Length: 364
Image (cartoon, rainbow, N blue to C red; front, side, top):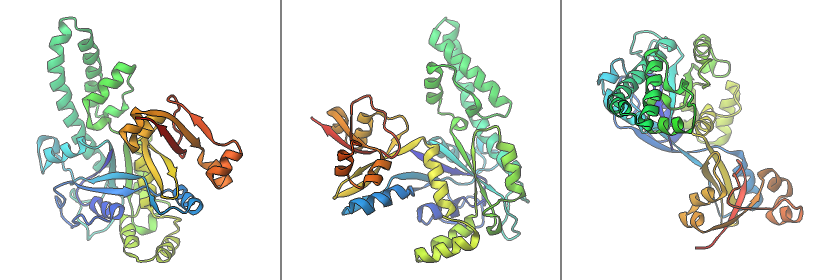
């Protein structure tokens, strides 16, 4: 599962990517600096794993991760191949969610591709390009499905009805994510279309250091514009975040954050938000060899969760032994949880909860 960082050129995407991943994507003050998409595997900050490490004292610790993709800046006309449009749009299509970075700071030394700072216009530029690309794909699909629908094919008629609704929505300059599938068939079809504007989105307002806590007039404009989108807006001073990553010690970083009025780096908030945006959650395995956070889709069953460790665990699943994270921390160990009756044995139907500490029994 990957989240792609998108935006116009020079809004701070590559600098943000560097902060998130510590990979050194090229960062320069001109468009099309990032051509190949850079992929960073980023640890998901989670204080729970630190607590488990403290209690279990394992030989090693493995955190959950999320893949972040730095995609080059889109420009007007990208849907028609302007700039490096087709390549960029293909890179976005391969991602599962979108982190849309908007420039919300004034700085005469950093060129804006359209001459002045206006996050509302910038957002519309990106939205329109993505909507036009989706419209092109929807109309191609409609050409094929129309013929089958005319012959009375029920599946084709269902697909045509949904495509017609999507086309109408896109023509109104609205994204496909604003459409709610009316039944399971439509949900499956929607997923199969792989529309760019159907992907969940998170907006990152890149502000100056002084606006990192409360935001500014540009952030207010963005919040007002996206209020009907069911999308989260995060305020981040990408320049300050870059400075924080340069500091050597934890203590130095904390002093810097306190001076800014923050309790943790904005990058940590963003990574957790991206994880949630991808509909991911965590369960833990905790033993003396290793304490590890495992990533699963929200709603996964116990066998599906076991399959993340190894496919044999899912095939030969017998049962899951489960302790709620809060109980593990409260009683301090697996043995004490058993004594207190907080150790549960669950079968194939069990839906894993975020933070469950689990052990699987299987037979292959």
